[in-house]
Each structure stands twice: as structure tokens, then as C-alpha cells.
Length: 173
Image 1 (tube, rainbow, N blue to C red):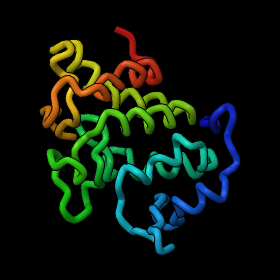
Image 2: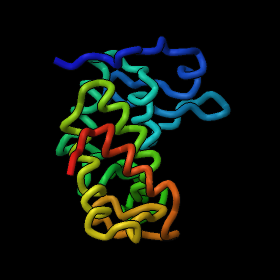
Image 3: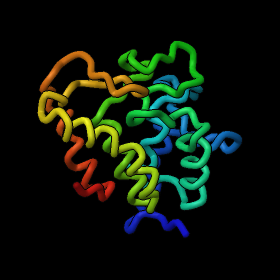
């Protein structure tokens, strides 16, 4: 049985102004500055888990559909920044599919708050193993979301977000 976060905040009008959930695909899409919905599946659509916006049933549906084995965000290494079925997706392309540790950490925290521990561990474990195997040489700006190949700036501080991510996901070594 899944339960909502311990202190589920009531969705504020500000949260509703940023994300709009689509019932038919259980995903939260961004809202443009002009008020229109941006129908692109990117990692921002998973952030409502961190903010405590979905009900327990909505969170269950979101996780099952989008983080499960056939989901847009199920990958070999963390969470892609863009859904795999979106135009322009590439697992090593910065904001078009690369894995960003800081954003992934927020989603992992949201998963844990909704008691999706196994899913949080699936996402976190490969990055933790990479750090264990290579030490601090593996703190990079972002990674290929399928292979874990690091890219761009090395020793980037937010690469260290793997430490709280591992704690949230209850990964012990």
C-alpha cells in the first residue's frame, strides 16, 4: 500500500499555474508564460512528486506509466531530462535526454516520500556505483542516461547530490 508524503502540502495556485496534470496519460505538463500547456514530457513533469502535489493514486499512476520498464523515463542510468519518445531525444544530449544529478535527486526524494523505494533505488543505484568505482572523478555536470558516460564539466558540485540521493533511497554500502 502506497501512502502520500507525511506532510502532503495542499496544491497551491502557484503549483497549479506551473503544472497541469493530464488525466489520459497521468503526466504533469508545464504551462507557458502565455498560459498554454506545453505538451512535452520532460523531467519537470515528475517534479510534482517532490512537491507533494499528486494524490497517492495519481502518484501511483504517474510512476507506473512513466517510470516503469516501458515508460519514457525508465533508463539504465538515472532519469533522462527528456522523455524517450519525444522529438530530439538523445541519452547523451544535455537537456534532450541527459541525466542531471540535481534534478534526479528531487524526483528520488519525491518517490521516497510516496514510498516508491524500489523505484528510487533503481534510479539511484547506478550513480552510486559509479561514484564508488571511480571516486570523486565521477562528479560530473551530467551523464548519458543510458550508459552513465559522464559529460561536460568534471568535479561539478551538483554531482555530489548523489550523496543525499543515496540516503533518500536508503542505499547502503
